Structure formats: C-alpha cells, structure tokens
Image 1 (cartoon, rainbow over the protein chains, first blue to last red):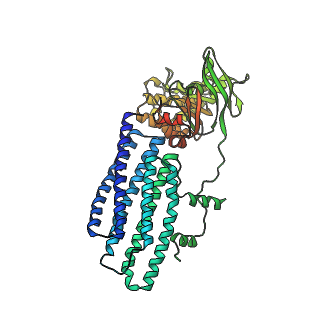
Image 2: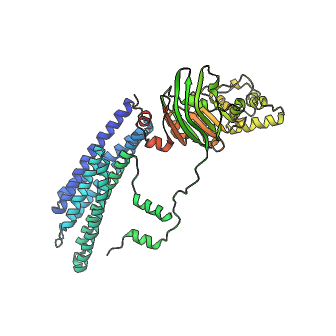
Image 3: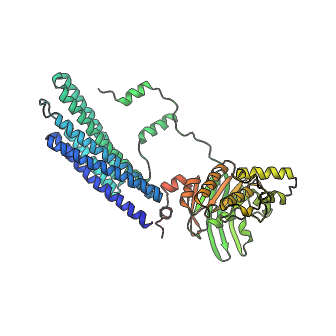
Length: 227
Length: 277
C-alpha cells in the first residue's frame, strides 16, 4: 500500500477516535442530566456539540479526498465508507445528547413529575450500546457489533413501556401534560441514540465482514413472502 | 396499546409486487478451460486453470507482471502456437468445442476470436485497407460489400465519424487512441464472437482511454470480451467479472463488484489494495 494512503487512513482513524471519545463524553453527561438537570451543563453540551459538527465536516472532507485521490478498494474502501457513515451517526448522537439535556432542563421549572427509573435504565443501556459500538469499531469485533444490534430490541421494548406509562400519567393528571411531553421526547431521543449505536454496529459488521446486514430481517421476510 | 407507525402502514398498503431481483437465467458459458496448464519449454506458466467465462460480458484478468494472465488470454485464440517449445495440457473450449482438437482450423478460429494488443498495430496501409484486410484474405472481393463492412466496423469501434472523410489516408497518420480503435474495428471486421484485449488502453491518454472503455461497454452487447489490464480501476469500471492470477495460478474469479469490495482470498485483497509483497 502506498505511503500516502497509509498516512491518510491513519489520520482519518485518529480523527474518528477523537470524535468517538468526545461523543461518548457528551452522551454520558446528557444522560446524567436526566437525574440532575442543570441549565449550565446543558449549555456546555451545546458548545461541545459544535466541535462535533466540525469533526463531522472535516472527516467527510477527508474521506472524499481519499476516495478521489486513491480510489481505494476492498478493505480500504470498506474502511472509508464505514468511517464516513459512522461519523454521521456520531454527529446525530451528539445532537440527541444536547436534546436530551434540554428536555431534562425543561422539567426543572415544572415539578410534579419524576423521571421514571425505567427511562434512566434505558438511557444507561443506550450509552452502553454507543460505548460497545465504538469498541467494536476500534477492535474490529463484529461479534460485539452484532450484540449491539441485538440489544436494540431491549431498548425499543423499554421505550414502548415508558411511553405507555407517560400516556397513563397524562390520562390520570392532565395538568402534567407539559412535563410529560418533555419526558416523552426525552424517551424518544434516548431510543434514537440506541438506533444510531445500532447503525454504527452495522457499519462495523460491513467493515469487518463485507456484509451489509441493515434491514436484514425486513428484506428476508419480503423475500420469503415473494417465494 | 400503541399501534406502531409501521403497523399502520402495513394495514393501509396491501402487499404489492416486491422489487426483488427476478431470478434471471444465468448467461451461457462461452469460453471454458479445464485444468489448463501451459509450458514455455520447461517453464510452466499456467497451473491447472479451470474457469468459465459467460457470453456477452466483460471479464478482466488482473495480477502482477508474469502471473500468466496474458499467456492465458493467448491460449484462447491459440496465439501461443507460434512460440517454439510451447505446449499445453488440459482443455480450452469455445461454445463447448475443444479449440485444440486436431481438426480445428486455426485461421478460422482467429476469425471467431479477435485480438487487440497493448500497442496499436495498424498495417502501413490506408484506413480502409486496414479494415478490409481480414475480409479480403477470407476471400471477399466485392467492393460494395467491403465498403459496407468497413463502415459498419468503424461505426462499431466509434471511429467512423472521425475518419469517414479520409478513408484512403494512411492509418499511421491517426492518433494513438484512434489507431487503437482502428485495431478494434479491424478485429470486428471478421465478425468475431470473442474479443481478446491485452492492455488495450495502457499506452493511451485518459480521454482516449475513456473512449476505449465506453466502447467496451457498447461491444459487450454483442461480443464476449476478455481483457487483461494492469489498471485496477479500469478493471473495476468496465468488467462484469474479474479473475486474479498469481504465479500462474488462478487465485480467485467472481463478480467484479465482489472482488473489489470484499474478495474471498487474502492474496487478492493484498494485491488490489497494494499491500502485496
């Protein structure tokens, strides 16, 4: 492999790792806000998110440059496309982190409703999925990546249960609707974080095995029906 | 209980025909080799190559210099016959017929299997005579028919518009890219079934290369094309299937899309990503 491509790929890898570290940090802090909301902390997250946006743009530019200049194939091609997609997913995770913190703060002035334990649990699971998907990328561990994909079902289930609870709470106490809507959004944001972790994990499986597993069940079902 | 959005969608939209690929019949095999080994005297250049090449498609041979890909290409129209001490074992079949069988007329075979080389090799004759040469030695004398063949061949090779007003000019006055397309036109004049191309664009500038590549794409509608190339991107762009050779052995053959995104063999991956050696 040419020295130029090696150097560019290493640079890209380093940038993505740095971005991973920052995004993990943001999502950790955002989830902590669910227990102890603070305007001050939420503002800090928004500032950190700006840095993530810059990372996202820079990584995309670098990927495009490598594609144009080196026309990589096989594992190199899979690496570039995976990095390109993972960076976009991480950028969304950081955005959601900021949104979760905003929703947590939204409840500060409106007491009367508590963040359900289940939501905190789900948030921990989602954070763990982000962490594992990043680990899977770093270690090129497709088994761990597949585990992350499987974990998403648990988060989805929790989300449905939480939303049921919130609906019930709104039904019982209509005066709490505003607070409940904040919780509702927070729960959806956390669920989306888990979805993005799943997408990252799917990209890792493609990077390692060259197999696109996205929408797998859906496509298989369709094919079975067609037969 | 919540109704999910996807459940709502499924309730409202009855199943329609899926966009699943229909199971199209696989194309017939045009060229087939069975345990093909080739020797230059005592040196073995190919080792037990077994491969099937489908008709009306482009197959690219890739691999480092000296890996046997050109030798393999030349066995398909028996160009190696003229090399002293060269011999082969195994079989080469075209449309299921063994082209090394005793009753095969080699001149007839080479009409069916045209070849284009790395360096363009126009005859020092007019453009018209270059194209008409093959049909003429095959016995065609009628001028109107020859003119028709020349026009058709030049059109197929995407050269007609550039040379139609100077068919009697020397072919040597054409540019490198035009000379190469002239050679393709010359190969097409005998109405072959197969076109072998040995690095047809390696001596050309990017614009002429692109024209040859476009041409290959057009020609595969009618011909089975086998191309040797050192240009990895070219193989990836223009071929349907790729075969990777190393030290006289066929390491891997498969759909180009798969070879260039997720090859099965480590050696293929090392070569195409430049990690070789």
